[in-house]
Length: 106
Length: 122
Image 1 (cartoon, each protein chain N blue to C red):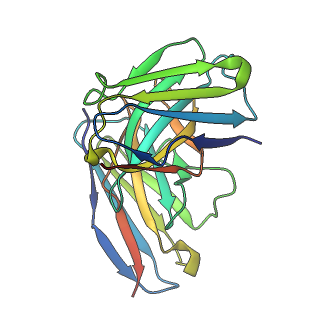
Image 2: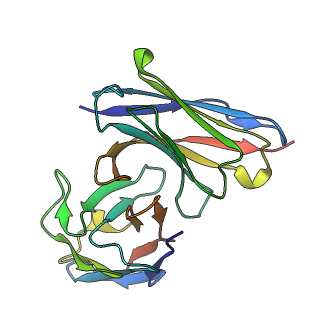
Image 3: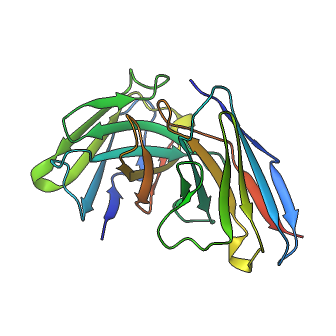
């Protein structure tokens, strides 16, 4: 099983600032990584797949980067609706998710 | 437009069997490359993938739960059913079904149901 480790567990950022979330895999994934956003009481929403491709309708302020075992989700200028929990998921082998990063308002 | 919706019991007794149904629209599970997965989330915790069923009847399960899970599809009804045996209170979670987008063998999940909360308690 590929273990996904996200950091930090909680990130406090002010609106308008940049947020950088990290995800590390226990084995190389090539680019088989997705990012999801989840708000309270809602299902996860696909943001990024293929490590850097934005899903349909996702604003350009969301970007993904990385390769191999280290990946990053960057939100360039935080809007109020971006404060949520973010999960990474690998699909190089059978799916596993990270434990999530909670992005909160500073 | 792809939509999915989960249905099933909200309360299950320990040791009982849980049966959840995912009813979907906007795609067909008889089309090559399509798949539907189940993912769960205990309250306040992370997501955990459970099972996947593919258009060609292939089934895949989480290694840690495979002995307790069965996933089936009914193409004519546009439904996928997940069965989990021998429930325990630790199985209390919101259960989601999701459309799998083909990317290699596994893929990622681009459309999700709203989820259904299942509580395991006596």
